[in-house]
Image (cartoon, rainbow, N blue to C red; front, top):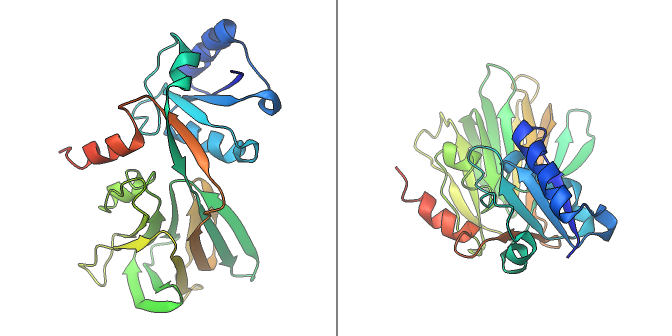
Length: 252
């Protein structure tokens, strides 16, 4: 097993990086068989984005606070632990956004794609699913589409549902909806294509984000699962993402 270690900039993660590389060595990415990410969920997302082309399984160890996407930190018997880990295959979302100059931008998101108002003016968003208009005008602070892995992040904070891994679903969740006031969002098939049209884009400017990649002054955002891309996350037995997604729904 040839491990490439990647650490966030936090002091604890950097200290543990040195301890682990002194003990297990450090393999360059082109020659690695596995990646170990040290940090929190933010660093895990960066690692998955930055190393996607290498198609390597990633085992995360928490050096931050929550670390929902991470395993607990333990330096002992790491290769055996990785070898015994369960695989959680994830598919990212593909965001195709058009800006006010009609330029088209494409980004991938592992957690969610979100559109948010840029000013004090509420966003007015038209929502189409698979080329069928489902909502003419959502008045809101924003709206997001979350993957199962991302459903416990921003989506859950916006009162969206926790989506089990392997359920074949995506969450479409409004952020502070004003009209219709009681609309809580929708669960969609992961084969759906979602189009969010920004109404009155000049007067009500909106930004779009694919995880941490942000684009401002968008006029339309198309979101669909990039099913041809599979990211393999590794988890200790009994500590999988599926287990934690279930547990999250029973927390007060």
